[in-house]
Image 1 (cartoon, protein in one colour):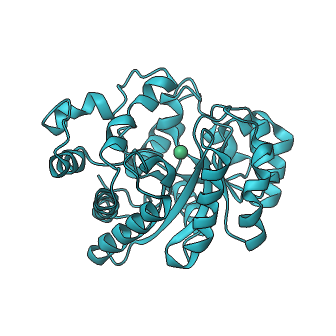
Image 2 (tube, protein in one colour):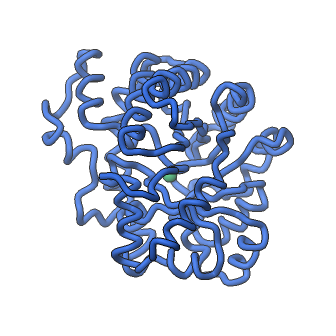
Length: 318
Ligand SMILES: [Zn+2]
C-alpha cells in the first residue's frame, strides 16, 4: 500500500522490520532451525496479535529476528532488504536504527555490525537511489556503560559514512535517564544529532530529561501530552516527537487508537514525525499509519501534508 504523504520514516528498528521472507532466507543460509517454514507460519512468532496488551508480548517478538542477525553477512542482507522494501513502498527518506551490541551473540564486534549495516544500506540504495537513508545507532538501557560508550564512539567514527545519530532504546525505566549524560557527552560536544526513546513506557519527565540531555527528537514522547508546560517548551525549541501510533497501542503506552493524544499534540503546535517503529512486529507500514490518522483522528490532506513536511525537515540525513 502506498500513501501520497508517507514518504519519510525516521523511527524504524531494523530487527523489528524484517520481512518474514528475509527471516526464512537468513535461517536457511545459516542452517538455523525456525519454528515454522512459511511466512504465515512465522507470523505468530514475529508479529504481535491484534489484541496484544502487554509490553512483554511485544518484546518477545524480537527474539526470533535477532537470532538470525548475528553475523555480518546477515546484517548486510537484512539492511539491504529493508531499504528495498522501503523503496518499493515509495519512501524517499528513512532512518534505520539498530543496537550494534545486540548482534554479538556469536562474537561479532559492534564495529563489524555497524559496517555490515552501512554496507547493506548502500546495497539497497543501488536499487533505489532516490531513497535517502541514514543509520541511527542505539545504546541500550540494559547495556553496560562500556558497551554503550562503544556505541557512541562508533556513531561518531562512522558519522560521515552513513551514521546520522545516536539513540537510547530498551526498557525505559531500567535506569534513570540522567545517568546517560556522561555517555552522551561526546556526541553532544561533537554536534552529532541525538534522539532518545522517552515518554513511552516512562512519564513525561523523561521527555524533559531527554531534551536536557541534548535530544533534538524524541522517540515517542507520547506522555508529554499530559504536561502543558513541557509541551510549550517542545514547541518553543522545535523538538520533534517521533510518533508511532500502532506501536503505542500495542505496548499499552495508550489504551486505544482513539485515545492516542496525537491530535492534541498536533493542535498544540508540536512538530510530529509519523513513524512505524517496527513494521513487522507491529504489523504496519508508514502508509497505514497515515491512513489511521485520517480515519481515526480526522486529519485532512492539508494536515497530513504538514506532518509529512515536519518529518522531512526533521531528518538527520544530509
Ligand atoms: Zn523505537
